[in-house]
Length: 32
Length: 225
Image 1 (cartoon, rainbow over the protein chains, first blue to last red):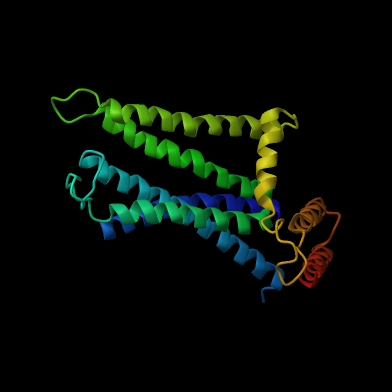
Image 2: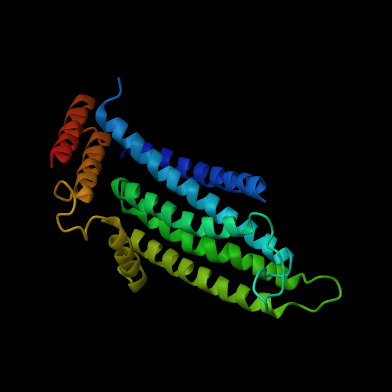
């Protein structure tokens, strides 16, 4: 991986964490 | 047209990021599911002659049980795909431990310190809350200590421990004795070779064409192995 790819992936990981939290909250809203 | 190596890299990204998203989704589900149970006193059960009936909130069992199984799936994805990206990305999976215990411990502490009006502080929640935070924060601090030491090139016991932990999960096929259809690939060697190429390319020692050709050769060799 190039440095730029690594940096992009690191940003995408943060996006995935936030998206996962939103998904979890949405799922909870759907099943609760 | 995208070449094969780029497609493979994107699939690896997608698998790894899916693991990260699944992990945080499961943590969120467990966090919210736990809060719903704590809202009704911290326990629920029904059925049996001596069990006090306290129905569980809708979805709590699914969130807590499904969430905990989902965490294993998420860790598996992160380890499997992270092994292709580099050891640092596999090591990130260990952050799941402090994330789980600190978030659930937060629930215990919050509910313990904010009992219903007129009731004293709830020690039954505070004690596990403190224990969860010790279980979560201890390894987190140890990991940060080891990570910082490793980055600055010092070989402290924390750095060595973190490195061994990462090594223990970075090669998921290490225990397979010929069980797979082909010989176990040494993904680390491929990643290292590609990283070395990238450095040469970034430093200007390789032209774009030379870099692309060398990269394709490494990835082709790996597929044939």
